[in-house]
Length: 158
Figure 1 (cartoon, rainbow, N blue to C red):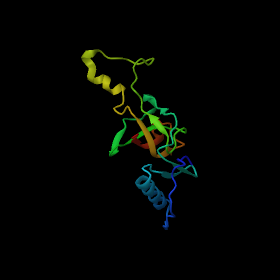
Figure 2 (cartoon, rainbow, N blue to C red):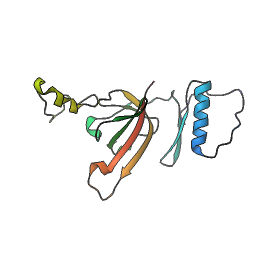
Figure 3 (cartoon, rainbow, N blue to C red):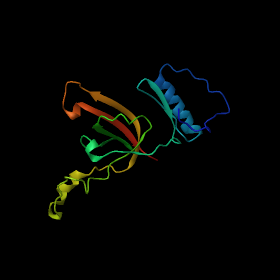
Figure 4 (cartoon, rainbow, N blue to C red):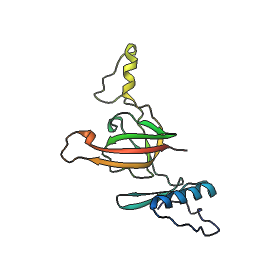
């Protein structure tokens, strides 16, 4: 659990929740409305993970070659991307999207006249994001990298 010590109400909150999702939504709504610091709750690898916006770690830098395809917007301020299998990502991790592939060994560059084709060597998302959801996909019989991947939903850092 990585939350601020300032998150303490001056009264008991009585509520009945039937699922973990309901509890996470209730706590998130209360902390966002009262403390302006939303607490997120999730389950990853059999562990319950709790964090808020005061929790910060150094950003995990993604390389352009880690991505499988381009990230896409799926909601307001929320992106989804597919990457090679990553064990270092978890809920609440801050990720730094790649800044392009300039000056990489083996990169074939294009001339200014062929500029539109050089756009494919950088991602359109170059900010820091916080991981909200992720899942691992693995097919033990497949040699294809797309069958061994991590799919991440992340939101822009405020």
